[in-house]
Structure formats: C-alpha cells, structure tokens
Length: 498
Ligand code: NAD
Image 1 (spheres, rainbow, N blue to C red):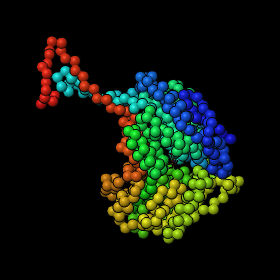
Image 2: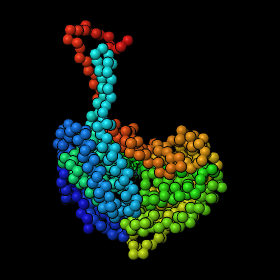
Image 3: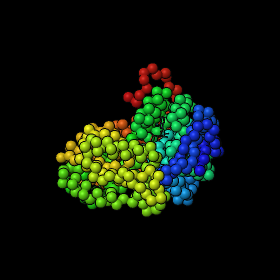
C-alpha cells in the first residue's frame, strides 16, 4: 500500500484528516491512500510559497533555468520508474506513459530557455532622450489543478514555466493517480529547487476552493472537465485572479472521399483507442463525407478494433489498459447503453471483456458505433472512453457545420489529399487545435495548447509563448536622462512626438 504525502516547504507532510483510496485499475484493488488537504494544509503551502517568493523572483533567470537542465536529466534517468508509477495508478500502457513523460519533458526543455523568453522588449529614442522597455515580471504565488489522465505531462505544462518565470507554485494534482506527480516534484527538489518554490498538496473540492479563496494566490491554471473549468474560471476571476481553465472535448476527424484510407484507419485506431480514449485530444467522432468512405472505414476498423490487445498497462506490448476507476467504467458503459437505446448501430461491442487473472480490473474493449446522429447523447457529450462514433454527412461544408456547432472546440483533424479542402478547413473551423492528416495535433512545447468554445475558459492557452504571458505581468518602463544643461519648460498638452 502506498501512503501518499503532501510536499510542503521541501518536505513530505503526512495527511491527518480525510483521505481517499487510490486504485490499481488492472486489478480493481485499492493500492494506496491519498490525503485530502483541509484549509490548514493549503494555508501551510501558501505560506511556504509566499516566503520563498521574494528571493526566488530576484534569482537570475539563467540560474532558475540551470535547475531545469538538471531536472530534465533526472526525468530522463527515471523514465521507466515514472512510467511504471503512471501505469500502476492510471492504467495506461507503459509505452503510452513514456510518451506522455517525453512530451512533458519537452516543456521542461522550453523552460530551460527562460533567459531568452524573458528578455523583454526595448525601444530606444521613443522621444527625445527617452528609452522605453517592457519587462515581464512574475505574478507571485500561483496554483495549478490537474486531471487524472496525464499525471506527469499536464503538471509539467504548468510549473516548470511558471517557476522559471520567477513565480512560486502550488500544485493540486488529481487525487486518483497522485504518485508519479509527487515523485516528479521530488526530483525537481533533487535538481536544486529551493524549498517553497514548488509545493504539492493533494485533495478534492475543499482544497481547490481554499486555493480559489486565498488572496495570496494570484493566478490559477486548471485542466480538467468543463463544468469544473467553468466553475474555477468564474470563482477565480470574480476574486480578481488570472485564470486559464482548460476543459473537456469532443474531437472530430473528417474523412474526405479522397483520404488515404489505410493511413487514416491506423491514425484513427491510435487516436480513438490509445490510452483507452482517456485523452482530451482523443478522436471520438469520425465524420465521413459520403457513404462510400463510411462503409469502407467501418469495414477496415472492425477487425482492428476486435484485435486490440487489452490487458494490465504494466505489461509491455499492449494497445490498451483498463479505465481509471470502476466508477468511470460504469459511466462509459452507461453511454454505450444510451447509444443503443438512441438507435445508433453498435458495430463492435467491447463490454463484458474479462482479462485472465485480472477479472476485477476496470477493462472495456474498443467499441464502435455507426450511424450516430447529432441529437444523440453519445454524440453531444464527452464519453472519455474507448468509444468511436461514426457520423455520415454529404459534404465538407456539412461536416464543418457540425463541428462548428458543437459546444466543444479542443482538437480536430481532416484526412484528405486535397490542399484546397485542407486549407478551407484550417481557415474556417471553430476549433483551437487542427490537424491535417495528423490525428492528435497536440502542439509542441514552443507553441501553446488550448481549445476554443467550452474547451477553454480564459484568454491565454497553456505552455509555450502563451504560458510565459500567463505567468508574467508586463511592466512598461519609460526612462529619460535629460542632458544636464537642458531644462524643459512645463508642458500642459499631452506629451507626443507630433
Ligand atoms: P475533473 O474535472 O474531474 O478533475 C480535474 C481536477 O479538478 C482534479 O484535480 C480534481 O481533484 C478537481 N476537482 C474535481 N471536482 C472538483 C470540484 N467539484 N471542485 C473543484 N475541483 C474539483 O477531471 P478528470 O476526470 O480528472 O479529467 C478528465 C477531464 O479532463 C476530461 O474532461 C478531459 O477532457 C479533461 N482534460 C482536458 C484537457 C485539456 O487540455 N483541455 C487535458 C486533459 C484532460
């Protein structure tokens, strides 16, 4: 049994009050306990961050970055151990866990460029003997609240950049799979991070509400489901905080009649069923333009879905592990039942899958629905499981209208060989991240990640250049050193170069 602790002021802090079970999703057994922070624990973390801030903001950006270089090395040295921890609590396969960690490390690499990205902007002679510059200063104590589905990568979207920008950070990871997140934060301390610059507190709504209410916390980054994102955005901004709150998704892939079908099928298999569909960029709807491509797609998908290798994530060479909890398994199978009742055609039914020796695990095989229509719940809502819905339309315009009318706008992609269709799609689709023959267009670390519509509340996207802007405040300085002999008369008209 793992007894997870908080990490406050550079030290492990055991929980004293409420706690929650952590499961091994492959066996269904409880594998540990995670403490749920109360207001006093949150205040302890805030006090630690607040105390660390004055010295940390004065630490040269290059020195802050040097810690990130060492951190990157430690993450790479511990890749397998971290992947095993992720897999043991989340359920995703080891290979997938390594993939998530590598994408997280890319954000650490970006943070290593702190001196470059914080250089500011300078203009000489904006007026007589006057120079002007914009400085990017830290916001102060900032907090991040993260989801279960990327326990390594999503926290790494946030705190490396926030920290190199000179902020002190409080992380509230998902209580469902906290171990890898905590271990990674400990590695950052091994890399030389001063105490208090990063604190990790576990918890649920009570912990989050305490962070929202605290006047010392100046900014909140959130990644999770849309109802909670909207709540955190509303409550945080009401208190004058900066908030970026990334929410849920329903990502459509459009298949044009001229698509390279074999490539599209392979791409869809990974994007729909990888990580058991528990990705905010998972493709959950395939929109086929014309019955011919729809029939051909379904025909090719069926045998591949039936052949998916499913088992405990910690076994190498599998395609899919279990879902994260029994509760989530029930929710996803509930959607499958709902789709059937609504009249969609369940072409592959993954329910009732039993894995030898892991009969109590939270397993669900790949499911495929054909002839899904927009009024069905399985089309409208995020299922977050291995369920792909095929929708049939007659034109690209109809496909785009469908996507643009959906409440979510996280990711989308088009499979085509036609540049004109691809260009129209990129220009006019109301979605934040778009792929052309790329099923999971997750931006690299030096771009920024974020959806549109109800997939993101706030103005700035996560990580990359938007992340730097989110974690810094612009200060514009205008400076004049008048020549000793010159004295200007008082000027009552508004100063200008006119
Ligand atoms: P979730 O919203 O249940 O939880 C996210 C975080 O919020 C957790 O830390 C949790 O403890 C906290 N939380 C839960 N209930 C709360 C409440 N009532 N008040 C305050 N805080 C609360 O999300 P999840 O199930 O962990 O993750 C899956 C969801 O996250 C999916 O909807 C997925 O699309 C989304 N997601 C989005 C992105 C993105 O970039 N847009 C990335 C990953 C995941």
